[in-house]
Length: 255
Image (tube, rainbow, N blue to C red):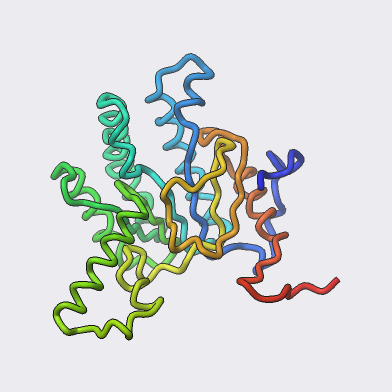
């Protein structure tokens, strides 16, 4: 459900109770193009402002003590966009990694990349590898960047890997369980998201973390991604904190 109107820009108190702060927040960053169009600006300007929103969100996540932040930066379907826009997005990604990586590292942020790397330009692959290698020992916020990512393809790859284990005689079919699948996903070792936020008012998950979001809470907010800020982030977390997470069981709350 969308945030209530009175939550749209209201800041949530900094001292949220520990149980009210999710361990893992995933964000579908939507609305850069519309933000630019409404202002008569080129789409690339919306994407530039979107990068600024990423920086703000990382700062907020660190301040709130969130352990994992996953951002949907570029989907496997985004290649269908006009070549000029794709080129602009690749340029912004490279600039973000080159200019922000040192700051992320200095703030003890660990960077993880999920998504297909095969077929990417060599300079992009090198930057992604460098980001992970430089920050792999950091123990603060883990920033998971979903780049060239599609959850259906991730699941297909996982099934293929498990089938290969069975073919080699390393795994019996009746031994396959939930843990087997999770170990074959790109997010292995990362806890499932507690909260998934989508900006721009759209209410769909767009092939993002289909397996991992089975019990996530979803908050859809009307604001476009370039306008996302600390107040909106805290408001979304405040909405999450009011939810009764039952995981298929009975409510833990009393009347």
